[in-house]
Image (cartoon, rainbow, N blue to C red):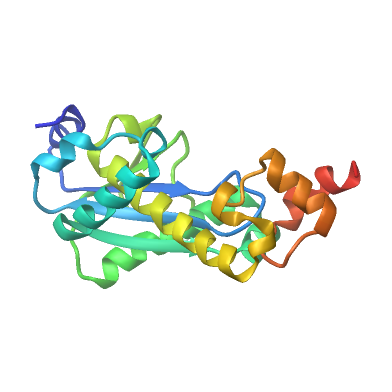
Length: 202
């Protein structure tokens, strides 16, 4: 049994782990996932913070998580990010992921959310866990689901806008992405509030 799963078990409650992907990029939505582990399997030993796993490993674990866990997904759009700011948009996505779980009639006692902030406008029992994706299995699995879901969205954008190479940077502010932005300008999927500094220096 993994130490991350032991962390969850020691809570003595049915846990719903919540995490997000995509707070930092210049383009694309922010995606949150809510996960309840339904049944423990040996593959959970391989799960850690999604940022420490290779893309191939995350993809492989994604399918297994869907098989043995209850999963909810929530997305906040670029427009919502620009309108309410990234933190509030992240809370929107997290609340939507939890609502997705509720719509499946899945029971849980407490939400464990990655980070140092409780989910705004969520009135249920919750606890924030700093660096939770390296401590709680429920949060770590949510981290993988959110990351893979968002990466797949960005890969679809790379097919629509091949010249922006979203398959390489996933919307993050890499040197390549910034150079393309300065050359070609922003798309409708770019976060306008994130680009002011970059474009004003051009």
